[in-house]
Image 1 (cartoon, rainbow, N blue to C red):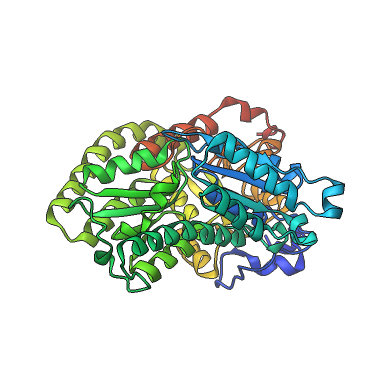
Image 2 (image 1 turned 180 degrees about the horizontal axis):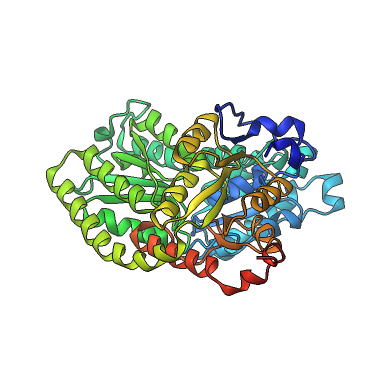
Amino acid sequence: MTHETINLLEKRKRQVHEGGEFAMEAEKQSLAGSVSQRSCSFCGSRVVLYPIADALHVVHGPIGCASYTWDIRGSLSSGPELHRLSFSTDMQEKDVIYGGEGKLYNALIELIDEYKPNAAFIYTTCIIGVIGDDVQAVAKKVQTEKGIPVIAVDSEGFKGSKKEGYKAACDALFKIAKESEVEKSQAEGQDIGGTGDISTLDLQTSDSPKINILGDFNIAGEIWVIKDYYERMGVEVVCSISGDGRVEEIRKAGRAQLNIVQCSGSVSNLAKMLETEYGTPMLRASYFGIEDMSKALYDVADFFDDPEIHKAAQRVIKEEVTKLVPQLAPYRKDLQGKKAAVYTGGAFKVFSLVRSLKTIGMDVVIAGSQTGSVEDYKLLAELCDPGTIILDDTNPLELAKFVKEKDVDLFIGGVKERPIAYKLGVGFCDHNHERKEALAGFIGMYNFAKEVHTSVMSPVWQFAPRRANR
């Protein structure tokens, strides 16, 4: 089989790899006309900031932008649920002509008075970038009047893919963390300017080792599962950004001794800012699958170099894996040799999914992401079996044709990939924002195996047209 037989767009051929010498391109602008699965910058910013539950989230733009991203995540909160509401200035033709600054100001004042948030985020959309509303000035004015952080998120969709939105969100988060410590240092007569000496801030509230968890969005309550593991190890979580997030906790981000970065694509910029400002190192981690979850716990124990923490990590892992492995056995028996396709937003998640699918006996024949780098795909090719198709920034036509050619039994993706799978008569598992089942941690591996088994083994697929002649 050659790629020419499936009519790949000429300029996309080097973003697809299938066997042979690795020579792939990535981190490019989406090809015009390819109908990329990527989201825009605005969506990326909302993905990161939305789970902050006690903040006001206001979309400055047409109502369609707000409806697109409203309630797109299964992010849960242990307290306030202001993030479950979606607000928009609902820009109309008259506002576009005469400007929407007044409308934005009035909306912010009304909403802050009504809901008493601890911060407000203003998301700028494409039309705002075109007409030139001075959103920064409005934010500054409202912040002065209301005494809470009011932050303009520069997230005009035309700036690029959601990667640019991630960066805008990280800039907004760092403003909250930085401004808080500046206020503290001014009150105490201290100088924190880039010294990286956390001890000068008198931040230790207990003797426990302290970490931040960055890039987990508490889908279906996953952050609570992960926090429990670390707490059983004797490690304190200062803040989680942004799952089950709180403004006051984000203000304490500089107090941690280590940042654990789960979704590197979305929050790596924030981790780098915290490292530069406070000298806090970061570790990449994944909480999906037995191997990666165990490694995430051991890496933290190794960082603190404490024998007691290391023993506690071993104890947690042994307890959880001892329960889990027998539960997976019947699923593995049925799924042995079944074929899967995986396509997600970030490449790091794909690594974990490939390992998890191997754990339950499945073969990954298609793997890709929207925002991976060349190095990510090189590692992915090494992790997968020879002949696995590796995709960067693909589109529905390519996905559909590769799924048919590889005759997959399961497609793992997000909301935009679900229709592709179902139209082809393929089982589908949602591993993105909308799911309601926790898939992180050891319990998440069990939930994942159970969902995969239910989807793949459903008798309905025997009636799919592509298998009618079998």
